[in-house]
Image (cartoon, rainbow, N blue to C red; front, side, top):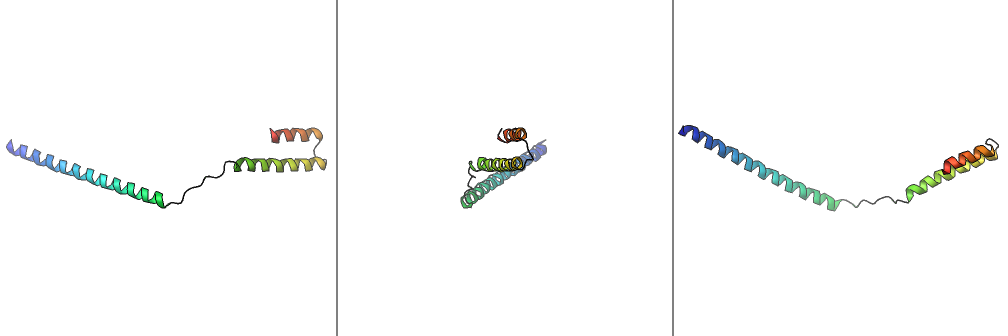
Length: 93
């Protein structure tokens, strides 16, 4: 029985040491990761957001181009007044 207790005690010491070592390594790696992230964040150029007004302006340009094309089709006699009105409402709607 005393021998069994000695083996169990030795196993507990080894397991405790392994756990402590693993935790220390994990903490050290976490510190390195935080430092590397902070350094990379400081060195990276700031990201500038695209202007929010640019998207609606592009949509407006598309609509204007479609309306110009629609006007040309009407002027050429390809579209009737009613078809022109329907298509115009669809574009602006």
